[in-house]
Structure formats: structure tokens, C-alpha cells
Image (cartoon, rainbow, N blue to C red; front, side):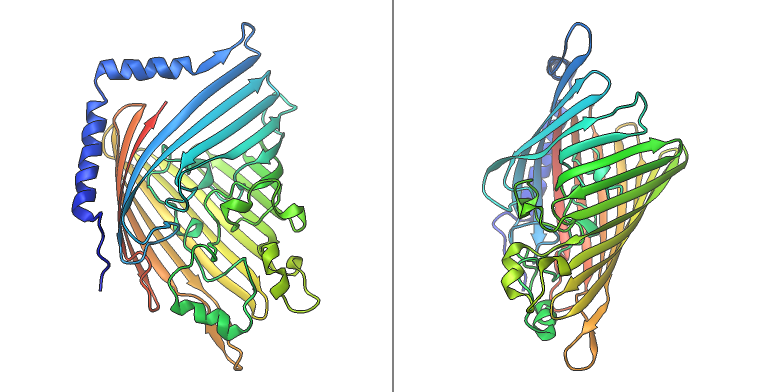
Length: 416
């Protein structure tokens, strides 16, 4: 039986219609002139041009209609509306130094994860010793170098409202305690997603803390990062003061750009995924560093006329105490087509499959529910400051629960 929602599909549709009306009303020349003035006023540089600061912002209003169990990293059992304010400060000192601060005010890094919250999601200092982009060194709290979705994950650049399955589908892997037996681990499949305890392969952009070296050499791109937490870690451990750097993670990516239309790359990550709270539940003589997440990924992007295509595939292994190696493979293929100068349509096909682990009875069993997930989106960029999207998603998941069988979402973004 389906859950009743105080904020159901009809009210969401009315809300989306209101957002589109608001966006359309925001496009007259006088309103755009005002936004342009605000945009210009948020940039400053000294007379010599050596020092420059740019302030920019994204204001998002999102609404989600949830059918039965919520999908991905939506922390609500009922339909809801979620506002978000993101502020970015970019600073440059001459040709060699750059700094970035990203602060957000919302109801949790993931929608409805908490009550109202204000925090620094990203901060970094970068040194580029050469005049070209061959070598860059940066330190701070910043996104993973793995894959290609992270470079276009904010609401203005992402054709969709949600993230691809590899970045938000919650598996039965937990970082907070070790399963006592294989049966206890496998028994989690009979439960609805426990987002407070379970992990995806990658947790969104994974703004973990550390340092990296990256750059471009002709047609090649490279990046190496040393981080405090794994790519699947949850947001509250991303800060540099968390986890004491006892079991860090390495991230690598090597990319190739054969031509101006397309690029592809290989990524790898390895690091401990269990939190210190799990240490007391480990087998005798074992430490957190004995249980790692290892992920190998491939990504590609291609542009042709009015089309843009992206894709990523990840093979990830979690070393689970008292169980063994838990393997999963997940990928997505994404296409965006520009219908008009302002309007676009996008489609994304996602899939995740799981390997087998020992069941404790001499056999083996699949450790989580395979799934297929489809996303369809329609977006309109009314001006260079106002954008609206609507998205419909459909999931087919094996097992007793259909997590997020259907999702309808809308988003209005103001950028300046």
C-alpha cells in the first residue's frame, strides 16, 4: 500500500507551475538589467589587476514527490520542498595563487538530512608555479578527482536534479560497525535503505580534505590526491579535523583528450571506509586499515552539434569484516539535446549489479539488490541568471523493497 503524503503530486505540480511562472516573470529586460548590475558589483580587483576577488551565488528551490520509499540520498519518507543557498568566493593573487571558499545554507548537504544548517563545504588554496597549466598544487577541502560528473555537479551545470546512481544509490555497506556474521550482513537486504548507516560507492562530490597535484600536458590530464576519508564517506567526516588522518585515501585520475569534442579517463581510489566507531566490533588483531574500499573507474564525454554525452563506470570492492570481499559494478550513460537556444531535454540510464559473498553455510549469495534506474529531464535556461528543470525517475530494483520506484522533482535556480 502506498504511503499518503501531505504534499502530494497535485500540489507539487502546482508548485512547479508557480516556479516556471516566477522564472518567466523574472526575464523582462529591467529585471535582467538589475541582476546584471548585481553580478558586476560582486567582482573586485586592484588597479594593477594582480589581486582579484569574485563573489557568486546559486539560490535553489527544489521540490520532490516521493512514491513509497525515497531513492538515493533523499532523507525524507514524504514529499517535500528544499531551499538551498550556495555562496562562492574566488580569489586570485597574481598568476600563481588561487583560493576558493564555498559555503552553503540548507537543510543538510543531502536534501532533508538535517534541520537548517550553515557550513563550509569547500575551501582550498592552489599554487600554480608555471604560467601554463602543467602543474598545480592545492590543499584544503575539495571534491574527489575521481570520474567526470563532479566537474559538472552543481545545479547550474547538472542537466538533472539528482546525481547518477554511482554517486547516491545506498548499498548495505555500513561504516559504523562490522557485521557479526555473513548472515547478519546478508539480512540487511530485507530492510529499507538506512541512509544514516549505509554507504553508496561515491557520496556525491566527496568534499574530503587533503592535498592534490594535478595538471595538463598536451592532450593528457593527470591528478593525484591524498585525502582524509574514502570516496564513499559521509559528509560529516569530510572536514580536516575528522578521523585524525589515521587511515587516509589515495585518489588518481589519468585523462586523455584526443580532440576538442571528446575526452576520457581512468580513475582509481583506495582507502579505509570504516569509521573509528567500528573499531570495537572488528575481529581480534584487526584494525580499520585492514578493510579498504578499492574503486576502479572509467569516464568519457563527447559533444557533437546539439548533443552532449557523458558516461562513467565503476568497479568497487569493499573488504567487509567477518564476510570477505563485497564487489559491485555500477555505471550510467547520459545524453543531453539542445531543443532550442534555451530549452534542452536529457536522459540518463543507470544500472548497478552486485557480486556474491560467502553465506556462512558453504555457499555464496548476492549481497545486495541489483537495480536499473532511468532519469528523464526537461530544462530551460531563461536567461544567464535563471534556470528551471523538471525530472522524472523510475527504478526497478530486485528484492522486497522498491527504493524510489518513482520520483518527480522540480528545481528553480537563480545564479549571480
